[in-house]
Image (spheres, rainbow, N blue to C red):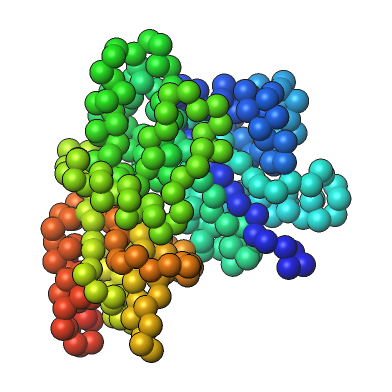
Length: 334
């Protein structure tokens, strides 16, 4: 891309009927997506959302005839690369970001994993913000019944409640508590946010430290959501990068898709100085570490299915912050 910065890819997701297309149409009509290439995904073969968005005057690309997480990676890959190539040829207006509206049954983690794993995509695109819409009228029942809705919460950077007028007065508070237990990283946006993609979130290093620490004090991890629970890993002193990287690699290798998400800051010691790295993974796919301007300490949120947070923390303390040799690290177990 001739030295250009990587183009961020934002994701709008939420369960069936949460109001994704209504929000997208409003953002287009208000000019909030003026510099954005929009990709709409449909679960059904009939591209209803494609037509609805087009009514608002936006050029739209439709990815295949199926849920974005169920079709082959080539569909998503081809659509994204096609957008970038068309921009470079001048075949479409310039844009500075891409917004994907997923189907209501999509797992946005598949998109994040593709952006991190595909050599051509990760060289030209970066993961932006995942905004998950939650219908306040039906959100509690949906979380009880739908693995897809839970996956959409786990992947979220921000959660935006919709259909508030029809919900009872305590629905937002109850759902906020449940969301915090599933994903302490997610910001729950105020009711009157006009554009959830423009709402300021803490910087990368502050996300875990300031939001998750507070959430873990207020909402301890619970495991009623299909065995999913979140845990927080901290270290009193900077750690050795080689030790941490070996532990994370072996943990993901052994437990694979059970580790749904890892995100946070790791304070690294070396050469008499302390540096900080932002670490993020979606299932077994690890994004390239990002160096942070300031080191505040180690704080990592791990969201897992079927693994107790206490067991993950014990493994972290034994193999990363403790005095454990390499031969023992090779036998990492949780």
